[in-house]
Image 1 (spheres, rainbow, N blue to C red):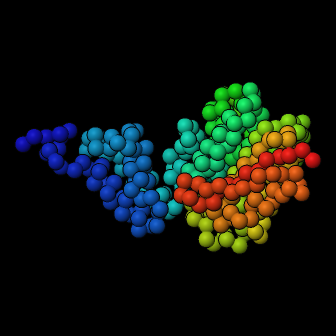
Image 2: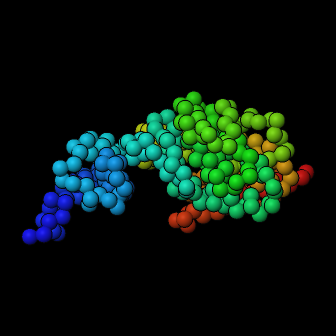
Length: 292
């Protein structure tokens, strides 16, 4: 009989068998991506990549895996358990107190990078409002090499994580309110970008437990219709941007018909439009500042 790593050929490893059980437990708990999360946690606990789980010897199975699964089963975010979130080409430190970056926001950054490159500005000046973990600011600093990127975050709980993530980067972090931030940059900025809070207070009960119970409330909810902060972002962008500068604001997929109307011609905007994410749902609005 041939053996592989102490097992008969073709036999399933202990870890893979446990991952299969964990997947079922997470599925029963309503976790949206049960197999992915079960495998990610197995890889994290055992210090390997997901594609290497089958190489973990049976004797090395770590029972702490089931502690991690129990936390995810209770709908604690995967990223809070591992302490890491992945965003574009970045590995970010996250945990309680900071909004966990979502894949949908990657398409917002993708559009922003294209817009900045199309400006043909040597050293574009970029401001990220409501920065949270710093994901957007860091991605732009990394992928637009000569950009000058400023990140603004108000919440002290989130700032603890922003500071960790931007340390050693070119991002300049400011502790402050997005609505009054950076008056010294008025009229000079090429791009204002934000993933602000945008969930209506009336939608609280429909928010996924991972966000509702673990993301900071300040990063989620924004007035009765969810658009209070975006209205404030419009005023800040209007103040910061140079003529020809661009604003990019993420919003809920149910707000696609509303957000572009905040950036009106009467208030000095042109080309206000909505854009879909990778799932073809309305995800972010953009507008161009014009001279008045």
